[in-house]
Length: 353
Image (cartoon, rainbow, N blue to C red; front, side, top):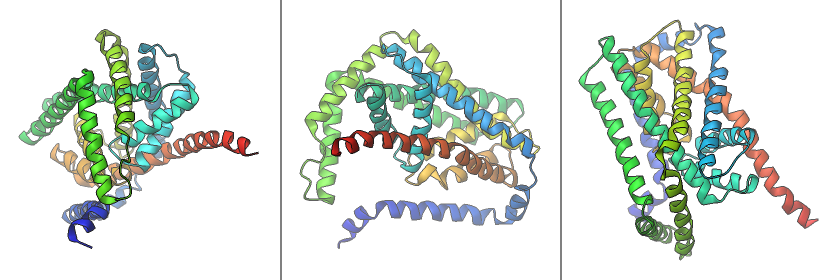
């Protein structure tokens, strides 16, 4: 086996090793604070932590209403209850199958096609617009966070660089996506090229697969995606309500983190939490580890330290938030995900009988 083929076959394992190594370096750098960190884990106000499930209920409420408002623009009235369950299942998929949100988009389309008769391209368009609303609403929250840090004198060149970089990336990605999808010719050309590239990569890894992804099928899907995009973007004023729901979803997630600080008896600057959450989530999009574990915690701790929150506090808070939030979200998400799979298999069982 050549060196190139070994790297191609083991790239995920290599990235995981690099990620874990980076995390170990971080742990070594702050090793002197670990005893105090773990002592702090058991000195919390448990009553304050009971607010976390409430914040998450409100978070998923905002997500379900965001989906409802986006589908309403396309002329579909979907059940709030089903969208709430879909949002929980979608989060489960994104955590267990990290792929920058691609797995979640595919699952969302398949789920709604089976339960509500929504086409895959329409569901994908809604999911893409949801992400756009999330990112753009976070722009406003980042501005608020920077102002909050400046008021308390925590402004620095590092903070401005982080905030400016995130804002720039969000604007550029949103503009690039809009530029591609707004033209039938551009979207067809772009995704035809990407499909051929993926097929080339797949053929090198698995020579027996000549065309793993059908170009004609992909072209048809993205033609439909273009039409749904044009319908949703024909009147931007209709996106005001989805924007508000997206901002509320982000707000409730940030407040979930802040509740943990309250449980530790600390009222830190909300701007520090906003900026750390933004950095960790954007970096988590490229992680191949479930939930961005390691990258998420490390970057959030480093960002909070840069904004004046000591690592002896930010590290236990981040760990507790991640553990408890996962325990809150994953069980119902797993239940609704597997319930959907069981419902899909029932007709097949009946047909066999």
